[in-house]
Image 1: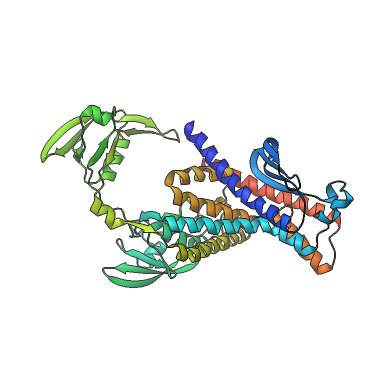
Image 2 (image 1 turned 135 degrees about the vertical axis):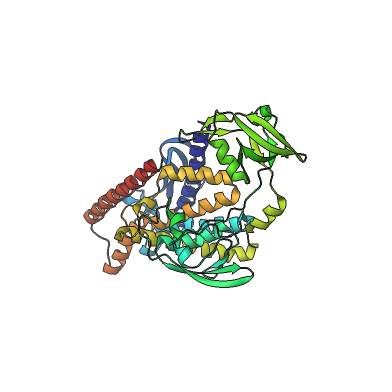
Length: 453
């Protein structure tokens, strides 16, 4: 229950922030263009908080349904307007001002994404160095000649100090079925190769299949199962396990790395097992019964309440930070925002023509879960997540779909070409079509969310 509550809170905070940024873009430019703003609302429905500002007595509102927002401007099409305020109505503004006001929301989201990425790169993104793990046969990685232990130095000329940097550079190309050049470091030699994703199909590029389909998996060093902390009151404490104990076998089966130890414990919930270990140079044997625990999917697993003693030398060998200085981070943030924005547009196009699966669409449930996961992972991960969602909002709102900002801009372009506005009936029909398209898109996204759950 607490985890669900934190997920909802994370979702509301992130979404409200990005909505506020979007609507502030409209609000700020409207004010600069001399348009009177009646209301600035974050959310829809019943007002939870509101106050009136000193300028134009604009009403600032936080409403109950945090799934959007709006800036209400003075407009003759929505009611009578005092003669003294006619020149401050939105509908009487010249075309270039209306265009600027409407486009300001998506642009604000795109600029905010650059700012979020800038903060992320300055703060640094810790991660694993991009050493290649097991290379599955007949995958693009295998065809390109990658070997286990290779370090990926760059992707298409972009340096990749961590696995996250590799993934973010490579996977968009995989989803779009493109080729991408990479540079490897192998036994102190630099090697150039090309990953060819043109053979991947819609099923291959589903999120759950991407790692196996591309053949790119991180190298996992064998870490000795040496215990660090023993949780008070846990099964491990009751069995007499201590800090520094090295596990050597479970029920007579040798264990030489931490992952094997964890997997064996997880399979033994509620069952007594014999743990053989080394302590102060001597061998010991103890009995422990892992506590049976339920995960989020309702599956049972065992745990005993211990953590891994991290080898500092091993950690320094495989750990890295993806980070830039304040000035260099500006260019990186702009480039990253451009990449994500371009990928979003390409993905939409690929889904329309059927070359990319609509399973890649995510709705509010997935966004909420990613918000919570990102917040748990640290500031840099949260900033990166906020940047991606902000870009998505900006790009989607610029699409030429009526009821979206891009639809209004499309109508303005037609007005500019033909020298006058479209008939009101045409605009109303366009908005009805646009609403139907949005409902269809949202239905598919929510369906995907439910399938993932």
